[in-house]
Structures are given as structure tokens and as C-alpha cells.
Amino acid sequence: MNIEYRREDISATEFTEILLSSGLAERRPVDDLERLQRMLEGASLIITAREASEGRLVGVARSLTDWAYACYLSDLAVHKDYQSRGIGTKLIALTREAAGEESMCLLVASPDAAAFYRRIGMPGTDRAFLFPRAR
Image 1 (cartoon, rainbow, N blue to C red):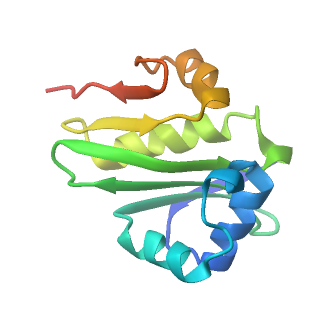
Image 2 (cartoon, helix red, strand yellow):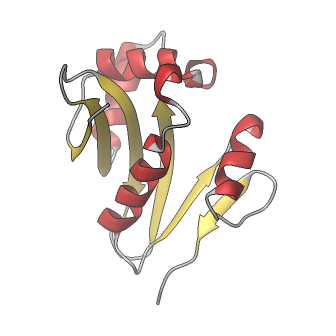
């Protein structure tokens, strides 16, 4: 499996597909393409994970950031067939790198995802997690 990561815009249709295939759809407005499009347009940073051979979208991290203080990782979605292969962890690492060392990275986790964030070393409360700024 060869995964390519890149910063790129995606369509609302592709976003819907990854939300559905990841299990995140139950908490996102997947039946409203116009709203999903606005969510994508309002994002400061989108990092994708694609199957290199087919270009198939298998993961996405969508964030809002000011590039100086805070980066809110709003959506982290990885296709269920590709979960537990380090893709989500890599998407988070690339998000943090892009946001810069002055920015904390924070998110609100679903109850079933909290263990994942703890496992990768992201401190927080039961449902709110953050990486403190380096300076």
C-alpha cells in the first residue's frame, strides 16, 4: 500500500464519500452538499491521503488555523478499510507541521475516538484534546 499525502482542495462529493466510508458521516451534514462545500471553502488547511496507484481518497484532515496561535482540526476521516495503518496519525502530524510550531492543535473527539488520541500522545480532557504550542 502506497499512500500519497498532499495539501489540496477536494470536492463536496469526495468529502461526502470519505465521511461515509470513515464512519464520521453520522456527525456531519452529509445530506447537504452546499453546506459541505461551504465547510471546505472555509477551511484554512486540507490535507489528503490518497491511494497512490488509483488516486482514491482514503483520508482527509480539514482544519481552521490562523497560522500563528491555534489550529482547530475539525475533521479527521480515514476510510474504514484503511484505518489502523497510521494514516490518521500521519494526517495529524502533517497538519501540525503545516500549522507551525507556534500553533497548538486542538480538536473535539467523538467518544469512540478518544482512545486513539490518547494513544498517539495527545493530552486532553475526556473529549477535548490539544498539543500545546512549542513557544
